[in-house]
Image 1 (cartoon, one colour):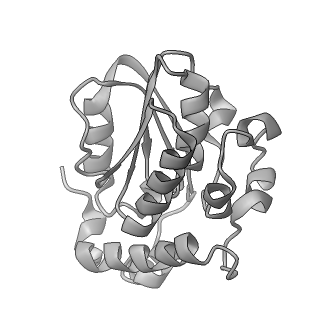
Image 2 (tube, helix red, strand yellow):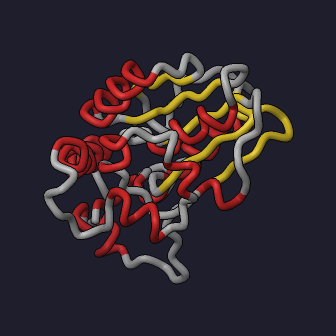
Length: 203
């Protein structure tokens, strides 16, 4: 099944608008945006201080999520975790600290500047259980049933084909696996005119 919202926007154009926005968050996190970022945002969405000790400062500075997937429970030692739309990697670093060296965490993102920042921080801090990959939620570069838990923070709402994204999420989860998302939810139908406005998708 194809998400009917795909008919309202050009997927490639939407993705490029999203990349432009988050390139700036990666490169100039102190610039000031129409949404909260960095350590102030982490406090707003109730990240514990002990979690943030696992996060390099440059990664934390580019945090731009909408919630706190760890509010539903921490990752367990030895678990395999996929972080969808990982950005600079705040949740990936936290998850990697929680699963330990016997576990594994893969962060997935489509914005090269965010991935480059995440990868550079990972090289500096070590963490052999952590890696980052380029990919889309509608086509996740992870094998079937690999993940014990899939986390995501403010990214599913940006997908033009949400049924395809959730089909992929279910594909990569093992039977009985968990989904822990922080995201945006609307409680009434979105008018077609808004669906056609890419600026509203990205902001």
